[in-house]
Image 1 (spheres, rainbow, N blue to C red):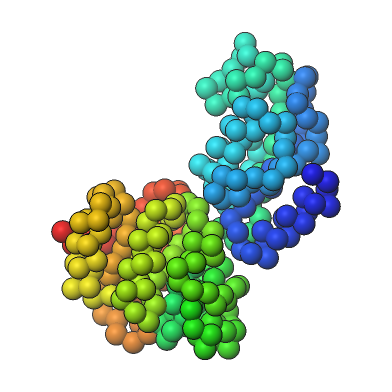
Image 2: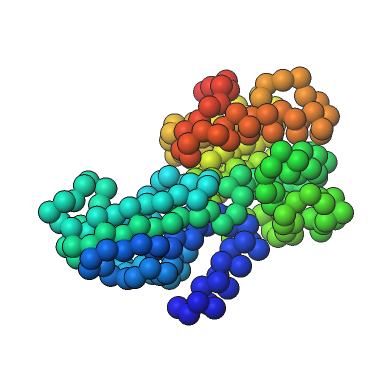
Length: 273
C-alpha cells in the first residue's frame, strides 16, 4: 500500500466516524521486520490496512490496541529477542526491539442513535454538546436530515434491516435505539446484540422491557448478552418529555464514559426476568 492509499484510508475512516487508530513504527534497534516510518491503520473491529511486518508482532499490536482502546497517543514497546521475551512480546526471533506510536484517529466517544424522531433529535443535540461524535440513522427521510440533527457528525437514511452496514461496531460504540415502532426497536436490538459494543440501550416502558427480555430469552439469547442491554434506556429519573429523556440517557452514558472499555459503571436495575 502506497502512502497516498494509506492516508486515503485514514481520511475515509475520519469521514465515516469509524473507531480507528494509526500505529507508526518510530524506533527500531537490531534486526526487525520493518524500519521506522512504517504504518498500519487498525480499525475498532480488529480489521486493518497496511502492515508493520506481519507475523506475531502485528497480531500482538492489533490485539493490544483493540484491548486497550487508547483515547490519547500511546507508546508500545516490543522485544523481538526470544531469549528476553516477556509474555506480552511477540513470538519472534529477529533479535531487535521496536517502539510504536499508537494514535486514535477520531473522537473515541461515539454514539449511534437509531431513530431520529423527537427523542432522537433531542439526544443528538445534547450528546454532541457533551463531547460525543453522533451518528443518527432513520428509515424516514423526513427525520434523517441535517435540519433535524444539526449537531450530528453523520445523518443516514437507510432501512433498519441494513443497520449492521452503518454502525461501526467496536468496544467503544454506544448505541441508543428509539425508532417509531416497537418492532423496529426489537429487530435492531437483536442485530446489535450479536456484535461488540460499549453500550446498548432501547427506549421503552418497564412493561415493554419485560416483554422484550422474555422473547429474547425464549429465542436463545443468554444472560451475558442480556446483561449488556439497557431497557428501559437511561437512568431512572423522572423523565417524560423528549428533552428529559435525553438528559436521562446522556447521564447514563456519562457514567460509563471514563471506564475502561469492556467495564461498566452503570448502577441500573437488573434486567427483567
